[in-house]
Figure 1: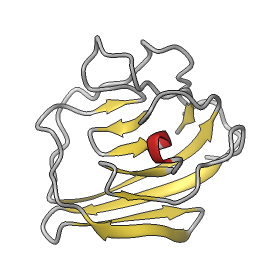
Figure 2 (figure 1 turned 135 degrees about the vertical axis):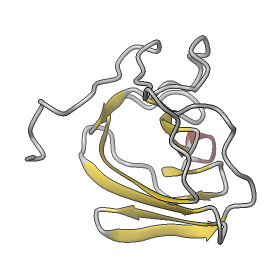
Figure 3 (figure 1 turned 180 degrees about the vertical axis):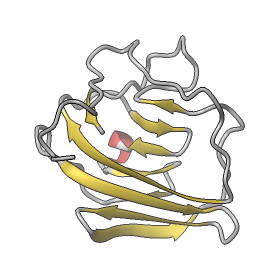
Figure 4 (figure 1 turned 90 degrees about the vertical axis):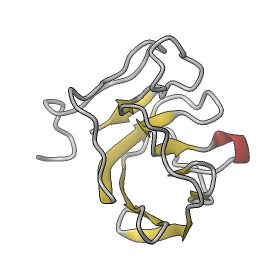
Length: 137
């Protein structure tokens, strides 16, 4: 797929918009890869792939996990960036890559909430507080 393709892209522009997988995703080690284009900075910790990957505006940071491991700089609104977040729940380590470069790594001391995944939204369907406004794919 080319980066400009809209056939595989989701757009989250309203707080109630979200995507939920049919089954839970629960692996001891996993990688979450996505292109991201922030349209509007809002919320404290907008959810990208909840319960794991969020933006961390609370600390003026970028993509990360649980407020423990996150990139030091925010993505520029309107620009596409490619992210890969690796999560090793066995070794309790996470690494964030942006456009092929490692931008953050560290220990994760807590595990994910035992809830199902949500993309672009809090796992609580009624909670629109930290909805993502942008284009992931």
